[in-house]
Image (cartoon, rainbow, N blue to C red):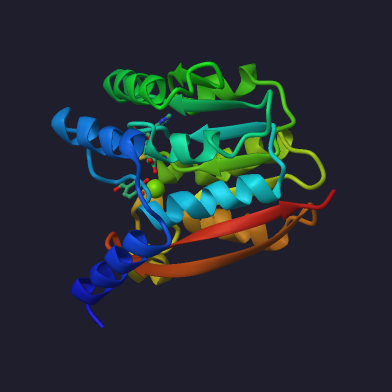
Length: 218
Ligand code: SAH
Ligand code: DHB
Ligand code: MG
């Protein structure tokens, strides 16, 4: 199996189960035109986040790492009436593009884009959030996980993107701080009695990667 096949299967899924719409298309187009990196979740992953937020009956969602707001739109559309999403983005240009995309999707009233480094903004937030999506600088994953727990309730879901990185996660000798951050995250998820966690490796148009998920039980 090759990335070409994975991409073809993603295209099939997206043309059947996961149709796009003008707001999502415009978001991707705006991001590309603005020269943002093409590292947003795929459509089927976006819809998975959407389903998880619905399963949670989410009224409060936190996202760490906005980029152009693509995953934000998927998540915000799942909010129950009166719900709110806070998304944190360090890069001012990314935050600006995201704000524009969120407005075009008609979600400005529900979404607050907070521009700044996540570790500076997280202490200002009030929980509990029903779902927390961690998708920023991977070296800080252990710290984001700690904050996610602080901002959780029993039943909150913590979802972390990009935890496999083409299998690089296996490299115990790596000095890459992002990789070490994610390995440390796994260690925390495995040993912290406050969560039940698992992870899934994925293939698709974004290559071989994966996500981790933790349910807060205490
Ligand atoms: N969730 C987005 C993709 C996020 S990409 C989607 O799937 O659509 C990761 C983002 O995290 C980038 O925009 C990057 O600028 C941002 N980022 C990196 N370090 C950060 C930090 N310390 N605090 C907040 N955002 C950060
Ligand atoms: C990168 C970050 C992401 O959030 C992602 O989904 C893919 C790649 C990166 O920093 O390379
Ligand atoms: Mg990601």
